[in-house]
Image (cartoon, rainbow, N blue to C red; front, side, top):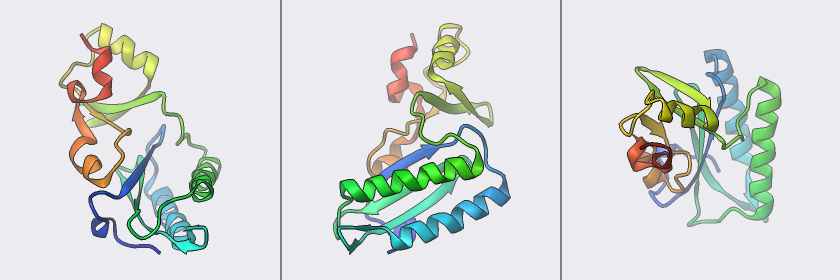
Length: 161
């Protein structure tokens, strides 16, 4: 069952998939339709899942699930990963590599492999004040409050001196 993201309770589970490049507006429109279709049919052991999504900055796909009605099972999580893999193939983009860092570089969003981010930290090209995207948040509340944060308030802090 598809709902608006704003209607999900704050304790809803979220998954954030970051793209290694910005999607075009045409791609975003297509991703929206494909995601609506997937979430409308998404179930766990036959039970409808109350889910929502949003596309942020033409780069992030955020899926939320209200677990109060029904929780995601292993099979339903597998189905969502297969869906994301299908988007990767269709749009020739990487959405599942968690070893990359996305952050603001001025007004632009930069995407770097973790090794490059570490190097940038050593060279002081990024600092504790650099705003990063903490894709490890687990709930809607964490996503709304702790997703875009200074590196010092995220797991990225370990690379900064």
